[in-house]
Amino acid sequence: MYEIIQAPMAGGNATPALVHAVAQAGGFGYLAGGYKTVAALKEEIHSLRALGTDYFGVNLFVPAQPNGQTALTKNYCEKLAIEAELIDTTIGDYTYSDDEWSAKFQLMLEEKVPVVSFTFNMPTPAHVLQLKEAGIQTVQTVTSVEEAQQAEKLGVDEVCVQGIEAGGHRASFDDRDPVETPPLVQLVKDVVAAIDIPVIAAGGMMDGASIREVLDAGARAAQLGTAFLCCPESGTKPTHIKALLDGHFTTTALTRAYTGRLARGLENDFMLRYNDAPQAYPELHYVTQPLRKKAGELDRPDLLAMWAGENFSAIRVLPATELVSLLKKEANLL
Image (tube, rainbow, N blue to C red):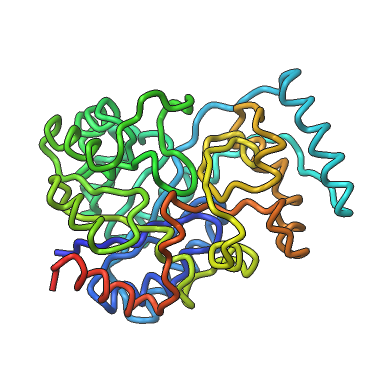
């Protein structure tokens, strides 16, 4: 049974090559379904299997209700339009998308993906039943005891408990500002005590000692994302990699500035200037998409969204197979 999991990391970081390398070292990896077309996701699944990895997971975003345009979001888009003009680009449309949810779900069944995890919201009981009947394992990402209990009642096989330390988007069902959120180890203990299905821990872990801590707290596995960002097999943008390593950025923060949903990343100028961004996901994700793309092309870390967990400074630049082997050794898993 694998104890080290490579997180899905939507946005191009979790490549088939990365998932395969993790699997080669006895870990388990996820492809990210979020933001991809159905055709692109299908191609990644086939590419991964062609490399020789048959046991893997795919993470899907469960859509929420649309956010109508308000005075707040309109004002924010006007500010972003001026920002985009300064770097010779434009903003995208304020538009809703369910991320091709239904078609991607059908793809999971057609491809018989071994493990499917869900983020942002829960699927319906009918969705879970369909996957179970197809022999597919289900995992729900949660951020609290209450969400974990809801997921257990839904009938999923496992929960992935995301701590406040995690990089990237908060997986909370209700995208509120977190209040008195316990650190990951305590959250794991609380969830383990509250439910009977297995628990995976995620958030801020960068070494074997932190993995051992969550395993001792009752988690059956540790899921890491930021730790894999600088592996050569990852698809992390060069500007992002440089920012993780050069020492200029020293802290992370939660922000809505880029997507309208709380996410943790390297605290840069853009996040500081737009710390009052409204809540409107996924609409603002599509608004800022051209701006973020141009920032990457221009090598502008002050503007680029660079998701990272709290402990990013401990990142190591290693091939993924070597990193997983080292993590196992440090966590006394060999």
